[in-house]
Length: 439
Image 1 (spheres, one colour):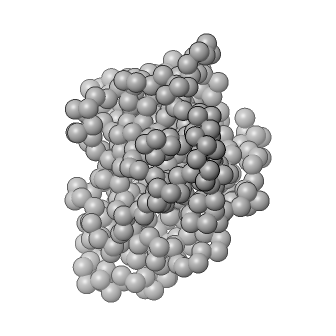
Image 2: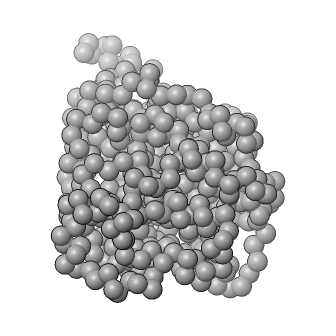
């Protein structure tokens, strides 16, 4: 590239430090970078943004994948990528998102603490229903466009605070999302271990090679149960295994202790699972005869004849081929009974949840990577969190420094060639008709 042209484009390139105030406003530190809460300089609108600085030099494949997807996806319940900044001097990449003040991990933790202290929290009666409906709406949009999220958990479900989108749910962290309409290889070959530990579907734990969008539905069922009880339904104390083998005895044991051991008549294809032989060696059906979802939820005062329980059963169906889809789930009778779901999950009430705290360098050292998010990026607080983020078999490859060129077109080429071969023609950019008609 011509040296003078390179200097000229570098001088003209927008710089994060010139446009935003964010120093001392770190709200997150995770696996893939730092997250800052920022405001535009010389702006009086007071709008807040999340600035995610990608860890390392250059652009990892995870970052390429996330950028490529987010540039195309447009839905009220999916986090919106506003802009990508490339710093030519230090070869850093910054992603600009709308700022979300809350997430389900913090919200559930707040309610769990209040429950332990017997403190009543004033929230709308339809809050859980509104949260679930918007999550389903966002996932339905992704699935309709052949995208699997593959890492749904409370920390990745953001909720907007005060502002134009008050109480709006945003699905975040697309770094592990994949197209599934025509993969070059089975997804299990590309990523043997996906989805954070406690939210991993049984077919994944049994080594399914051709898993489907049903894995996202199972994770949503886990999140729904957690919203109803304030406890992770499949909490397992043992840490995630650091291996490419997806089979995990203790996590399966936890699922069976809640759901019961799957009957062959209920899950006919279980015998075809790669780890079925190991399953029959490690487990005895007789140990789980008294275990079922009804008993578990009754302990948490959720009645088995309620519509919310019936929907939960459909989301947490062991056989992935029988698990309800996001589209059918949004039409479930649970969403038709009063109170109806709302676009603002806080329904005009005061928001009782505290705002995010700024982190110091000491907090960074203590942070755990499985915590909550702000604007689609890690924000760690390090207490009673899910196990660490899903393990990659191989570390993400880094795009060579020569690929970080002086304009944004080059990054798009990298995305197209190395990340997803993603076409905007695959994406429907309108809000789902169900969402519009409900609200």
